[in-house]
Length: 399
Image (cartoon, rainbow, N blue to C red; front, side, top):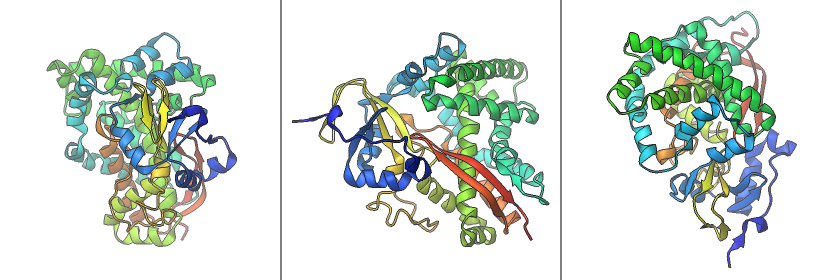
């Protein structure tokens, strides 16, 4: 007889211990249970189930239920969210929406941005003061991805602070905290207005940037005007917040290990392997949300249609059967199995290659430019969904 969801063991993500060090706790959950329950829904801790759930056609997007939890009111923000790709489940509509953007931001296609990302990183690093400790969150981690976005949409690079601020605000949808709904709505409305102006400006004077490429896709009939707008908003919505935290996580994990940082300063070609291990060891995305599209069975549990389901990547990445000694940080760890940070299939993150390039280029240049970099203050906060950098103050040239 199948077990009911209510009979699953209950886990609590609100504890102080979890928020400080979630990954040993998640690894312990995984040793005890394949699935459990929390206040948000069914929790998957088993590596194979996590990986399978990414591609399982019985599981769809959890975004509509998220909007219900937030109580997002009728208006421009909800209209955008309900028409963006986040609301579409597997099928032709989602595939058609992804096709143009995957063509422009796929693995090989994203490499065309590496030179520009390297320039943006170099400009940001060059502007950092070296005579005093500096907060790297605003001056580097936020600045790099938001400056890249300005380049993508042909906006003045001085707009990066607006992009960074609004991206951080609208990503609060994932907190499931309805007290933040008004701020989230305002952030989306400001972002939507900004994007409308960027599209209007670039339609009259197209170039070789990403926004011009997307406009050409719309003109060719591959995207509607709404789809065009929604993709450009989506890239801003997810860009700065996620990339900034991922850059910050990498700096803290690598610079806090002097021997590893010294290796990177001598050999920056190690940056890709180092970044890959960072994403395994302390992933930005700790879990991802899904919803059961039909009644289904999972690890002996009957999961009713409409049940929120969460694949806990943080547990999968600390599974000793797949990553020996998972608590040990090792940039020489084999590349396989791959981390699950960016999902997979039609729900995979379309910006994953660009984000990875941003982090790689930042780490490579920072390590070679400042081999003696010393962290003065560094801290994390962990929600059930994300790792966030709360503090990152460093002295770049303590010598």
